Image (cartoon, rainbow, N blue to C red; front, side, top):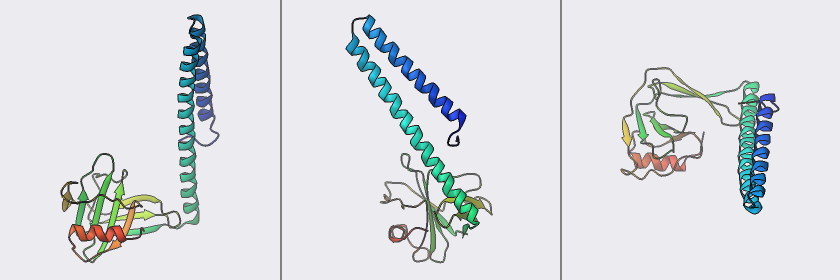
Length: 198
């Protein structure tokens, strides 16, 4: 990700603007030569607006990435990280539907549960595991990472979307909540829905 004011970033944007202007001018000129100036102007204008829209989208994504980087830097500068250690007795997994991302619920066996959901939490050779830690910044609640402390543990139960109504995702990627120990899936989901995020 380029830094704000990066020479490479600006050079690429200038090059894109130059190419866009050149193509628009060429299309208008071709329209004039072929005696269709209105069609040339419409095509050039449409092309220019499409390119401008892409530029604005790239600038927005860059601004968001820089803001995220700044929040992490502030948290790391403060020197505080919240660690949630999880040693699940069972793992509930919702089969991914479309592009919603992974959805895991880890049962601590003592009435404490941890829900993890999102595009960044798919199964890996070391996750989910029988013992892991989630590192979270306390102020902005950003997930810095998941540190596995044990071998991978397969899901105890994989729930398909049509088997049980499991439509709502928590607002936060990581949510700690309580429910009855070893509760059934509908009870766990109800508790998760009523829980506040970490």
